[in-house]
Image (tube, rainbow, N blue to C red; front, side):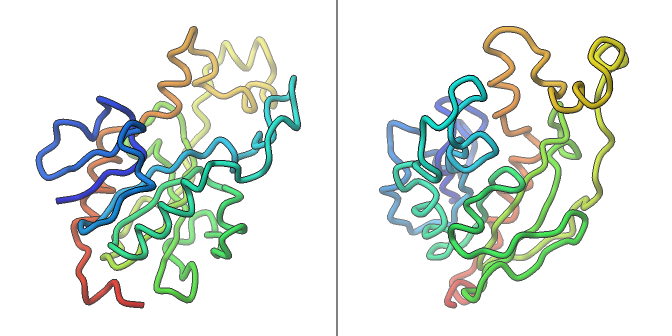
Length: 209
């Protein structure tokens, strides 16, 4: 059994054999084991716009996620598994984790037996490149596609906005309505399966740090 923490209600981790999904109603901060985990803690307060939007900056404090990242990291360290966050997440520095290099593969993340790497979800089914950092503990470390994907910018965006602005806007931002948030945040099925396969290699003798 794998516990999937901080996942979307009725999302891709639900109705999966051998997966125990913890959505917002269950409050994954309360997870007490004993199964390995795949953790997707909220990232809004750790990313580029942690303080708020460009129109309303400085609304929030850095890392003000009600303890979600701290609890997710503790769960991975205690029960084994893998945690996913956007690349360049400020949570890494806040929790004294080494930042992985692009294209560099797994590196030691800390002095507690954790490892981290950079990978792009675009290689595993996402609409955009979606650069991502992983933190893993007590598991096998698989070879992944470490390469940087090509920009997925349609010609009409470049013609209308110019390359630099089109790159900043991103492909997903051009999707209308509320769907762009859903698409941006969604975990592609191949990436979900990859994370689950990593968590399934956790063993108690590997977890003791």
